[in-house]
Image (cartoon, rainbow, N blue to C red):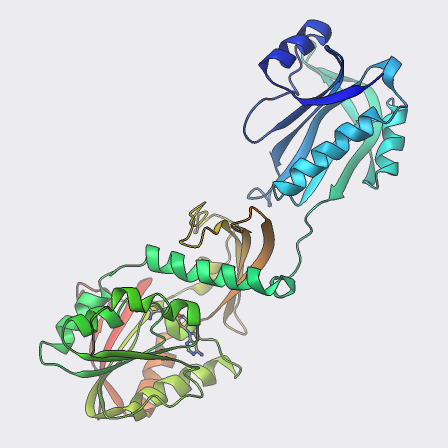
Length: 421
Ligand SMILES: C[S@@+](CC[C@H](N)C(=O)[O-])C[C@H]1O[C@@H](n2cnc3c(N)ncnc32)[C@H](O)[C@@H]1O
């Protein structure tokens, strides 16, 4: 007897229905894996695995769930169930699921042995069957929840180097694709005026601000630590001889001096990569801005004003931030998904830790899953104004938005146009 394993299509489904009646656990679709064991033309067993959303608070994640597994009495103890399950595992692993799981009733004694033998984790479970006709419960059952890790989450730093680089590169690509002028570029150009100025942008990223400054005729110099962010600049800066940038850590590198304007926007003051005490690092950067400016030079600083950070950051997943950048493929053929998985704000350290669930699919189809964390080093307006003042700045203008609306102390932007005395 040779048993064949075939993906269930409409033809096999109708054979299953003829033999077993309608099987609600068998679902045909792009994101399911229904498989039949066939003895010639006759189905003698089947399985179906589907993605299943995890319960609160993990509702952003899906596991592979074996909805149904069946092998005819006469065909048991021949390894057919095992082969069906192993094929499900193979599909689910390739699809990037973190684990595969199901429930197994104690009455299916062979199945419980099989899960054990296949190295599933087993967890005892008693339950009552719900009877819709009487709206009550009867028959207490015992069984096991069974689960096996497929693609365990491993720290980002343990990934192969090319995967880390692909993810960082994709991150820069997505930043470039998603971030245009949110008003700050126009406001900066307006405040700076039409006369060509020497401008330094700390943490210039993809050149979102730097390139329009140069296009407006200013001498624009940028610095950023991230090679992949900087790599996005040349394509936008073709023919601009008044734009230059370097890859360096703004804490240790020399910014140059005698600039007319220094820019630090996009709330970068709270996202600085540093090895120092957070507040000392932020203060240091403001002092560096002062040193790089000539007397009377201007500092354009844009940061997020959080009157009550704990209300902003202490959120369940997806309360404030939705799934991000779903499914886009970058120019190197790397695609991915990026889910916000909750944040915590510590009022003592004043650091918000934001958790992300990352998935990337490399051009060869291989999928990697890993968590990442962002830190927001929250500082107050008092901090910022204090550092500016001690570095020798006076804040000539302060706005609550790029349309020059006054700063009111509500959640939003604080935009400062300061002058070095
Ligand atoms: C939110 S992005 C802002 C990019 C750009 N200024 C804009 O407004 O689009 C923050 C940038 O800060 C850079 N950055 C953070 N810490 C840095 C450091 N210590 N030295 C240099 N760049 C840094 C990151 O690489 C990133 O490109």
